[in-house]
Amino acid sequence: MPYRVIPIASAAPALPQAQAPQLSGEPARVQRVLQALDAAMDSPALGFSLPLERWLRELRLDSEHAEATLHVTPRLGTAPAELAFDTLRRLLPDTDIYVVAAAA
Image 1 (cartoon, rainbow, N blue to C red):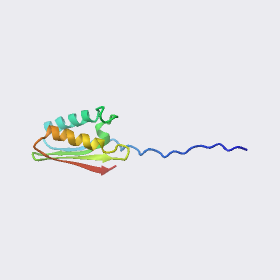
Image 2 (image 1 turned 30 degrees about the horizontal axis):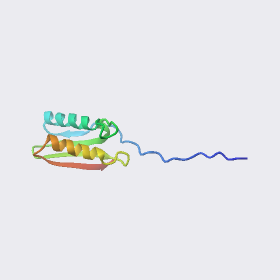
Image 3 (image 1 turned 45 degrees about the vertical axis):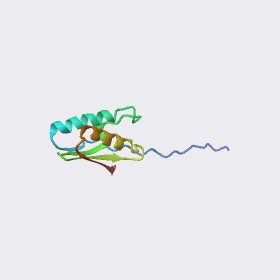
Image 4 (image 1 turned 135 degrees about the vertical axis):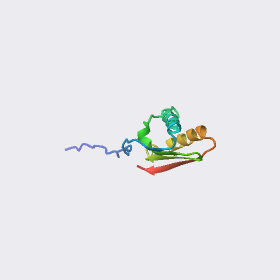
């Protein structure tokens, strides 16, 4: 009797659970940065669109520093971190910028 072969493919890593990021800083400035980051992640350069809650874990802004903590998975690669850094650098030119990768 012939056996039927069923190929087994490994599952792609799951995206992180969607939850609102932790935010700190002057509210108007934080909202301006969030809008720009959200627009950047919806760009053709990324190749796919991610809602903010899927990739941003924390955003902290003060007068001298900006820190974005991102969810990292092999599936997303480094593109979200690179886009976040470029966006923060464009919006906050005289600010020290830190993009931190955190495992999901």
